Image (cartoon, rainbow, N blue to C red; front, side, top):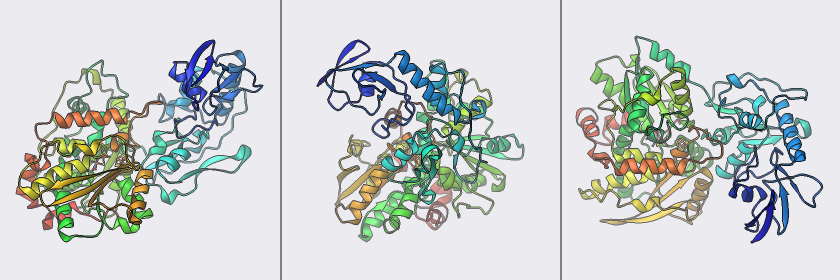
Amino acid sequence: MVEITIDGNVYEAEEGATILEVAREHRVDIPTLCYLREINEIGACRVCLVEVEGIDHLVAACNNEVTDGMVVYTDTPRVRRARVANLQLILSRHDRRCPTCFRNGTCQLQALTDRMGVHEVPYTTFFETKPIDARFPLVREPEKCVNCLRCVSTCQKVQALGVWDLVDSGSRAHVDAVAPDDCAFCGQCIANCPTGALHERDDTERVFDAIFDPDTITIAQVAPAVRSSWAELLDLGGKPPTPGRMVAAIRRLGFDYVFDTDFAADVTIMEEASELIEHLKEGAEGPMFTSCCPGWVRFAKTRYPELAKKLSTTKSPQQIFGALAKTYYAEILGVDPAKIFVVSYMPCVAKKMEAAYPGMDSTGTGPDVDAVLSVRELTRQLRQRFVNVDLLEEEDFDRPLGVATGAGHIFGVTGGVMEAALRTAYNFVTGENPDADAFHEIRSEGPERGWREKGFQLPDRTLRIAVASGLANADALCRAIERGEASYDFVEVMACPGGCVGGGGQPIIEGFNLSADRGCTLRIIDEQSELRFSHENPAVKACYDDFLGEPLSERAEELLHSDHGD
Ligand code: HC0
Ligand code: SF4
């Protein structure tokens, strides 16, 4: 331990801790812009400068370690002047059209400018405005980039990709996409961008057009993880942000039907558990991999093409929902599928890409999923329609595609797809249900080697499974499998840390990582569900009885399986 004095107060601190860490631990606020704990501690923005006795120049608090006897001042006129000047220099190269920016209200640069009382920029303002290329799910506005390098570090360290880097030098230095083809569209760069320089393609207007068209039947599906985060940036006046209130809010947008992606997650399990049993029976080499995360699927196909051949062919719940909405449900309604417009609310950016995969058109009338919106886009839509969310009472999903089990709800948290699949696979093998929590060890904290591995005893064999989230962890896992250092029967990978609860399309709240809390919410919803096994979902059973036949039937293969965009 060392002793450090900050603004006249003496604190004990761990050796190796930074000035910023010690200050924050004791509620001494030091502003930051480029700082991301353990990911980007590079002192690039110079907004966290402090004065240290005995050192002539000001030092960045985020990447200077405390030493015994250090005396730090965080709020002197010199510190304030320097921080303000540095912020003004950043602002001089920033397109400051805040009112029309997607991050208006959640931008860290905007918040700091206000917090630090900066009301003018005395430097010449210059930036180049480039037209937005709206073809891609991920959009970059370089004139809003502050060169904080948070996207660069996140992409490299958390996702083992190197899409972004700093190019050119001196005053021309700027961030650019240096390996765009490697992008998994996970959106983690967006989730960690402090400004509006990175955001998802906005599809809200297209959805409003469909809602206001009297000849179009609009159907919303809501992903598992959305129910854990949908109200984070809304004021519910103290009411709990339950799934029921979420349904009421989305219905107010004007949809004809509000359904649940988790119904389709239960269908995914019927197919994927059956596929797993076939895979085990065949004694096939290597594991079967889950395929419901398009970020992971794209990563596997570009980085590990041999392993990608072992991806489950079952479509993701989003795509299964779209296919069933335009076939099974169109038949129930007795309407032409061309009249149906399916909108997904997802915590994800990559789902925009998945919906556009070639072949995801089950009826020949257009994509099964017509538009995919992030939770941020949902928040904006609710604001734009002036929905008073604090007045909403709870409402149920519509039926039958709104009926789901606890197994479907946990898809949104790392390990959930695996656990849901094992609950049903066990039943398919033995004819009996296991305890619903029999596979809870999958949830155990702390990846051992960047991933979690377990062995589960089925009546006739031990099933070896692994679960990874975050592509750097997935990368380590794939390498171990390829080198023969690890061997499994079934592997779940989600691209975002913590699974979809940590998705790149979730609300952004600077300084908070809410994915663990959101994961707990989904686990609780599962525990409180009346039905916790996908194969017991009455709406899923009816769908098989009346329309699909058996899992892996010809019709199921045709509508619910795919090579994921090849
Ligand atoms: Fe997910 Fe999904 S769990 S990928 O994170 O499988 O986006 O929430 O909707 O499709 O269900 C995202 C979340 C989904 C799908 C489901 C899966
Ligand atoms: Fe999308 Fe979920 Fe995959 Fe992240 S983990 S890329 S949110 S599907």
